[in-house]
Amino acid sequence: MLRSAPQEWSYAQALRNPRLAFFLCGVVISSAGDGMLITAIPLLALKIHGSLPPAFAVSLAAAAPYVSSTCLAIPFSLGRLRIPPKVSLVSDCVVRCATLTALGLAAVGGVLAIGVLLGALVLGSCLRSMANAGTRLAALSLVPAHGRYAVNGLLATVKQFALYVAGPSLGGLVAALVSPEWALVIDGATFIPLLVAALLAIPRAPSAPTRSAATESGLKVIRRLPVAWKLLVVVFLFNLFYMPVEAALPLFVNGPLEGSSRALGVIWTLFGAGAILGALATNYLRSVPQRPLLMGIVAAWSFAMFGLASSRSVVTAAVVFFVAGLIYAPFTPVAYSYLNLFLSAKDEQPVTLLWSTVSALAAPLGLVAAGPLIYAIGGRESIFLSALVTLVLAAIALPFVRSQPTPVTRPSD
Image (cartoon, rainbow, N blue to C red; front, side, top):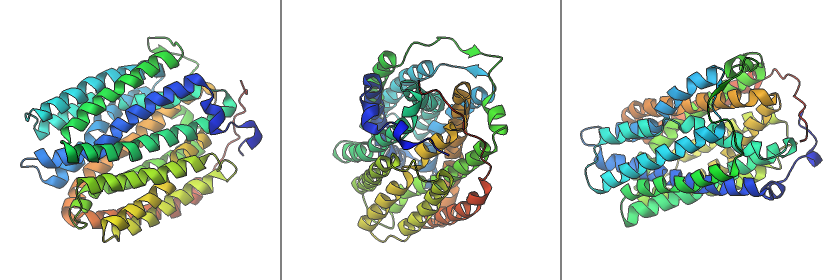
């Protein structure tokens, strides 16, 4: 059972922490840059796909950033080697800033081929999963125990706004007014503010990886917590079944809906607007039973995807995607907050990294599978199929995620 609400922070109380507020500013700017790539990368892949079929080009370009980062994070999440969140975050900022800027400038100069784009996205994103876990751990480290639920929700709020409201609309605008290539250059530059925020806001930590005999691996912790590994299975499958939607949407908009790059940006922006409202509502969901809430989100998302697949115009698709954003936004912060109830402080880093890694693994698998799927049956049909299997997941998941150990009692700091 969750701790009583009066002991928990509100979003406003969390933002009164100057270090956290400064760090979140860097996260917002960087996430907005990444949001630009949601519209820019598919458009760039379609522009330079060459002899590669468009569906394959889009799905592979979307999957590329997840491949190396997942492969690198797996050994750390399964073992007892610990890299401080600050180190992984700073390193990722440097690597991605250099890679994305170089890619964008090469594309602007007209010398970027689809193979080079895919290879550079794979190599340049090698630390992405570890940095994502590091971002959450760094934010949580800046507040006392009773502020953690608010920080999880607040982190989701600012990332949803940046990724799905500011980012895609800016990406669509840049693509329409100049070219999608410049979005990569701008995204590379957005890692500079995050680098500064990480250096100044996150407390000092050991600069070298550490190994503690007293610390269990993330896998070992999850194996002794049935609720953790069962919930992880659901999160993985939910993310896996979502990925065909992300790959199919650009082709669905440009094809059956007869939309433009700007229309794609508008649809993602409306998704983000809904996600903002959903993320803000997360702070008021702490008293709702978390397990039924999570499974209800999965089921509601599937119905939203049925609506998206049935859309006959850009306007209808945008409205449905707005509702989808409203539904989806609470899922990740509620899932992490629910998981954190059962983890001691020393178990948080390995489990959070393992969760981030396994969740991220769903992205390349789902996106790579989406290419042949979309090529074979089409964008609209792929979204419909995604909705159907997600609904089946929701029906199975509620009784599956049942075992609940006693929550860990944390000091209030």
